[in-house]
Length: 400
Image (cartoon, rainbow, N blue to C red; front, top):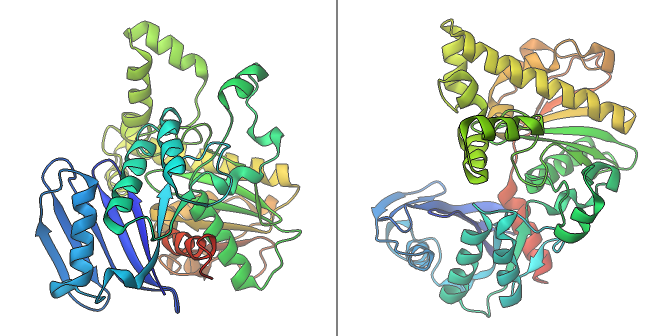
């Protein structure tokens, strides 16, 4: 059985076609510059790569081209689109409405769009993509929405309620939601598979580190706490996001610079973080290179990143009453051994001790890099959100 996995943005549409019998990726690609002009990159596993300029006025034309690439020409991998039994979609925000992955219908699409205030950059284009996909593939093909927020719905109220007047939670559902949930779920589940361990009684921390980053405290296999909040802005320093700061900074700076709420949001989401502190780039690799050349602000940026992540790890270990493992994933977490080493250094008081040589060789692999005598395991576990979406799609669509 073949599942098509979709991750849509406002001007892009990433996809993977997965054979569920062995969970192998048959083909994958990306439709870019939707609404501008259009470009598709289509890659067949072990085969051809097709790069083609195609007009994409809307997401519908992008889906039509995906169908064309999968079923014809150099990138053909299936004879008929009917071989795709279901389609899984990544959706950012489900609020408290969607606590699990959900079968898509017109009402679900409308609700995802209506949550635009909680996910303004993601939910509207994802709702648009769902509608376009429905138009191209037809309503008879089951579609499933897999929400970034759903894994975090197991948090206890003490983890998700903000200490503002409770009426605003009741009126507007203002609370901690958390994101990267599909990644945190995959990595924690994969850890238990590799360990052959029952999740009950375990205490682990998943560090999803990339341009957008979050930590998740996973207790008994379920989310207990997470660093992102109402939106993906909360937590610690990221590519262009500030992470958590004193709320008075917002009002003080808005008054000083005469900035509107939307301008402040833009500053904190798009002009802060690595970019804002370093003045170099939003990419950790560029910052690391600049720091190596003596750039003090670039070095400060890395210092802040490590410092804040350590603070979260220590806090989560205290919250859970112990720690069994720290798992690293995401672009930075999987690939940057120097950041991993710095985060895990001086953690012996928690029982965490790493082997520096193992750490250097751990990047991009499923690999343990804690020392043999470490009481807490440290691992790199590359994430695979697409396979989690595909698995959910198979199950929710009743095809499993």
